[in-house]
Length: 152
Image (cartoon, rainbow, N blue to C red; front, side, top):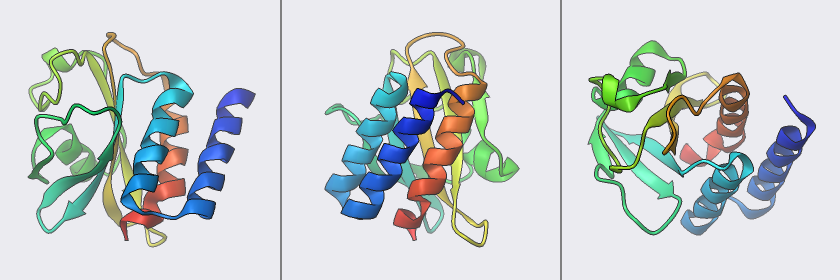
């Protein structure tokens, strides 16, 4: 990873350690993640019973699906596989649940506790096709690791 990406991860980790996991703090964390890589939108979803429930997202526009069953969407696919999912063109993936009409590509990263149990998902969207590469996956997986304890 590039040095500036590592620096952004350190800032995110420091903020989470200093501020905690309150709703307003998670909104700030989502915004830090969004701005670090210039994503269109970032959300933090927690698994509550059999649903993904949004805890925080960037911007003021709510997504079309603030909660949905854990077996649906790209989040459901990431939960089932246990791995990050990168989709270069969401309109060509039948699993995609349209959160915003401008979304073209998306990456979903599982958030795990210290026992490797998936607690939720970190979701980043872009309005560009094929917007996410290996650097994005690594960055988001590390960011997810820094904030996963907030979902416990």
